[in-house]
Length: 114
Image (cartoon, rainbow, N blue to C red; front, side, top):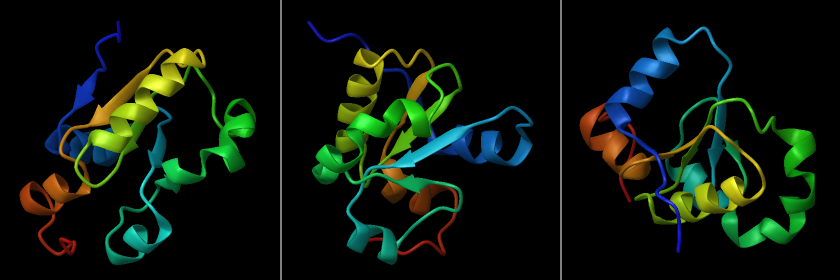
């Protein structure tokens, strides 16, 4: 019933952020108190639990054609967001596999784990 959600590894995310000259849309769906503990620059915080506050603005805040990478703590909430974005017509969406927890383990150990 649900379509396959494309994934990006945290290593690929780091490389893409470092080397990419093409536009990227970065969304973090964790709660604000989680973002205070650990975050990556450039990600816009759209807490999944507050979707009623931002869902009607998704097409004015983001371009459905631009590559959109979605992150959460471990990859579950971001996968839900990816699924929803695809139903909204977003054509280039990828879930950050393992979320910020995997990023802090594999890419940048200075990012706190929680």
